[in-house]
Length: 182
Image (tube, rainbow, N blue to C red; front, side, top):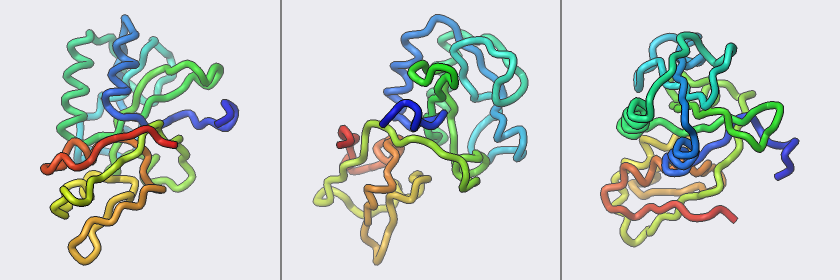
């Protein structure tokens, strides 16, 4: 993908997002702009917009400096609440990552506004259908509509997979893995 064709946000797994964090020394957290505009989120607290540099114009209000241990707590909360990790690029230099949004389909504009764009991640799901019990746990956390139950059987629409990895978090059979996207 050409750099000029890139969106501001892209999807990645939580492990990939953590690698971005590990390369930083300072962190700021602010309120999520989506949560401020839309009201209370059913899945998470409001202060989950992670920045790698202090900015005067973030997505939302309430910017504060936080420690790495607080960032670790945020990552744990996002895992428990099934939030998608969406790093955001520096608009002046798209090869630089300025921070990470943690999103869901309850309040985040990306999932609720058809004009919001986001790039797919470098990974895609791979499901071992022989091990799958068709429980539907992964369907509940797939905000991209890549997983559905039809006639009590899992149907995977891989073209819809953005590579967030939430399906791997909830699969009780451990039959889903994230593999390199072609």
